[in-house]
Image (cartoon, rainbow, N blue to C red; front, side, top):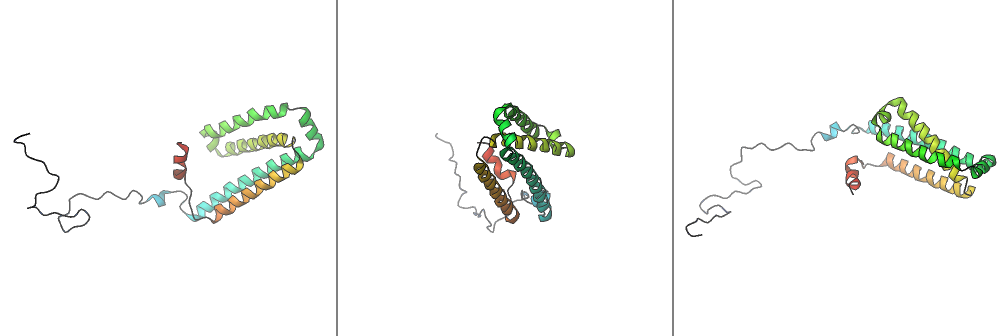
Length: 184
């Protein structure tokens, strides 16, 4: 490469050198881009504390109603001896409830119109709760009542613990934090 001028990444020594992070040199005529986080707090529908509390209250009231119905059905299958014996002798109710519950889960998960319309979503959630309670009741009828009571107590403790945590925490858990976990 004879005759070619060498290229240097550094400016010649006769030109002044300016610091990138705030030297005394001339400033570029370029506008700084806006901060990408500015304004996101206001656009978040759960940014106000009262709205978040009302949402949490609604979710936990719905969950409490579901648990009461489910526990009532499980206890009915566990402690009502006639129903318990009938469940042992006729397992087809269990075999019918498994696909019915699975189909309802798919409908609630995949059909946006069914999930977002107010009376329909509560009706489907109620039907799901009854089917799931009956399915768990059929399975609980196969076990000893003490084991069912221990499982019920553990479920109540975990639910109460998560409720207290959700009401007292300052940490906001958003879908943005869970999305990287779902990609794996």
